[in-house]
Image (cartoon, rainbow, N blue to C red; front, side):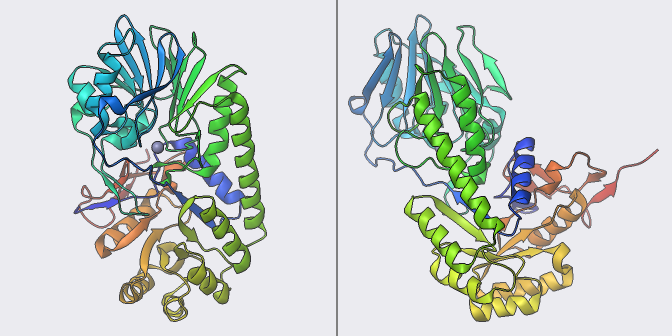
Length: 447
Ligand SMILES: [Zn+2]
């Protein structure tokens, strides 16, 4: 881990950054919600082929498969073998491949789409990769599958997949197979930042992964780029791709109609509107607590509540920290070491967001020391800063250690970088090992 920082907050798609940043700016930036992804309950028992049920034959050659405790799998049979959209978890891989070879017109799997990187979708990749199948994914999904991911809200770790299991055919925007099957990226980083759809035009079936849910609340994996604001445009893309007769297959639950998507889209528009209004008007502790209670009740996991009330509302910070049930990060409230001490004394937050631009390096060292002594968790953040300032912050956090949250992504949405060197973004990580001395940043030569 030496010379590297895990970077929980970073996403890969550049325009998603920009859009999110615009929204953050629009809602005032004072309070931020970070949504985590609930984990799909996986059945503990070993899967057997007998346990797999075909829940729906969507056409002559399209089968919707349901494995107990697993995400949906869509299988298309044909003379050349079987095409899958998603492949269940690794422990179901053998049963799944055996089952699809026994479907009417079935055979070996020649192609699998990964709708996103989650293990419930990519568990068959290794087996199918070894037998020479084409594994198709959006480029960001491949990036996540080639790096280790740790969910900071529950500490769950995901090892990168072995080379043979990684997608061997990637794309950025859209593509079409020879058979006429169309696929494309689902903006705006709704569930993760690598979501894809697969459309079967002959059968009028649209597979959409976890961007919408057939049962329960759709989840947002913010760690790998998903965010609630992305849901609206993501679902709008799917609405545009569907007509009234389209069968829409989500990763969870029964198929949906276009009308169901419209309802889900409207719900997200309403939620975003409400959040925006609440944030613009500035939270009171009461309002913040109402919101956290509503989110928890809906089953939405919130990993962190950043500065839920105004800077000087110490009582409010204390109340939300005490009663909110969600870790609170102090941002504007934590201006200097004296404020950090007060946060400790008044239990006004569980996390302190250190920004070097806010307090300077010497003060930041004091804040970090106070937080460590008081067992508060640390976050490294920044304003809208270039690679120069962000590299200094990254080196500070990596050198100090013990930072649980990292939010250093603003250089990624700047049009131009006037510098060479410094930190390197690598999927979920910030790489610092290449820096020889200092922050490692030099101005680009101007001629
Ligand atoms: Zn998922």
